[in-house]
Length: 116
Ligand SMILES: [Zn+2]
Ligand SMILES: [Zn+2]
Image (cartoon, rainbow, N blue to C red):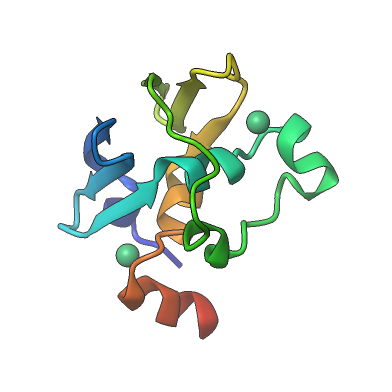
């Protein structure tokens, strides 16, 4: 189980030059997603179909990006998570904090994802 501090973001940063989306969590952990991987992991029903509730395979964050994302906007969606608007016009994905924390691609978290 994740503690409340593990799913509470203290800051969210979109870095277009590095093509990264970063979250710092209240427990001090830092998560960085490549933008293109995060776009592929969009949790909305259009992108994930019936698998929308499933977590993405962390290997999608290792894949080479298909393109650069020039404009990415992140807005809080209440306390649940963050809505991301991509420059391809897609904006229906609400990434819950819990889902983002559970898919953190850092080495330490991957070990835990593998042995929950
Ligand atoms: Zn989507
Ligand atoms: Zn992590």
